[in-house]
Image 1 (cartoon, rainbow, N blue to C red):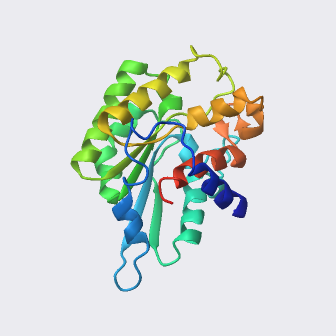
Image 2: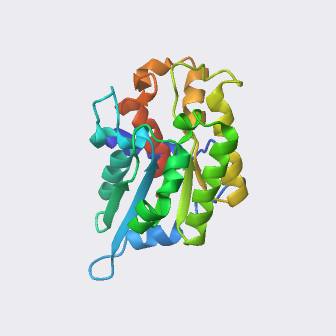
Length: 235
């Protein structure tokens, strides 16, 4: 955990995506970060919600679910270490095997009802089953409902799939990552560009297998890569 905190400090100095393109990382969660330093009796319960598929749920080698070492709980552990007076709930509304159309259908009832202060969406891996056009339509529905409710939103590009070559610009997941970056820029939301983080490692000669529990599920090290970038929005 100390290693993760140290890595966050370093990554705060850099970002995969230009801040001019999406929400400003230094100011987007300013009010939320201020609330995290409130003390009794001025504090309240703060809800961070992760919506998506099997990756935020914590699936490792299916059917094993390693929730405690998935990026939502890794994020929670570091936030509680850093913001020791904060009352934080980290909630996963994710379902393994689900794609964004299915997630959009239950969005109001099962996600917005959780009263998130900050919401993350991660669906691109499974959206290959429905195609870019349908995927974008579902993402837009969720994005617009979130922003209408005045909830801070951070979109997430996909983690790797070993069945694809992450260095191939024409790989299917590359197109979904590009779409999500475009939506984050258009709506001025936050962005965690997981795909770019892993691609950079692959470009440096790292083997993606060292980050994966199976072809489409990160292991703990892979989840740490994602959590480290998530945490830059809160530090």
